[in-house]
Image (cartoon, rainbow, N blue to C red):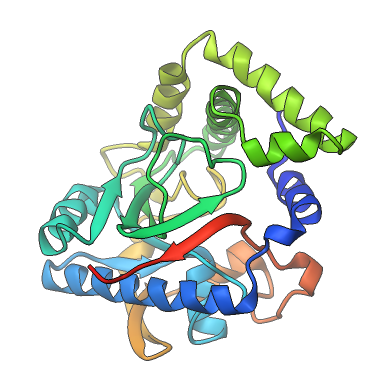
Length: 301
């Protein structure tokens, strides 16, 4: 059985609670992420690329006029056709400051395009031994055309979940977490869960990491032609963020701390679809937090 993502996050937060970033560290991370966002905003405005804050970053902009207080990452969406242009322009403007890593490389199971800040370290539990870049990052998710058929969408959603999870398990098997392995020696529940992940990952690797990467990537690529619907398959889940074509083409500026960034014009509909009553602050035990083994920020670039 492949694990439920929400249950995994809950278990991690319970077992590795000592790795939850303290408030002062979160503030430092957020200050650096704000600087990174300003750089991205500058590049997109200069090169006429439509972008918008998404997920928790959009929620933070609307509900808090900045970051969600406990959040320590940034999510952005742009149209798929602009991905290469954004990457090239970003690296041309800041050649020494950032490193761009595309999704699904042989070194990483990341489902989204990541822009890493050089001279920074941000190492999350579970992936500390993955041979990929490690630093503070902005996640960039592409908007693509998705199937007009609800039935086909359901099928693709299930296949996407299977393929993407098998890909992640391959990496757990090949590059096991030192932290998780150490704690699992004295935690029976964690040991059983992690051993299962690694066994499934080992079997998945027999068919090849490239296979699961290729299949997941193919499903997420969407259609070259307009289907009447568009979405963000690489985000929370394949079918969670699907709207009619053009939904993400219209944006508005909103205040975000001492800056202004773009969000979907129909942000109310977007956020309600993701979070329900999104203006209601969740109780502490429902607040999703990331777990990091190492955070080191050096922005003197």
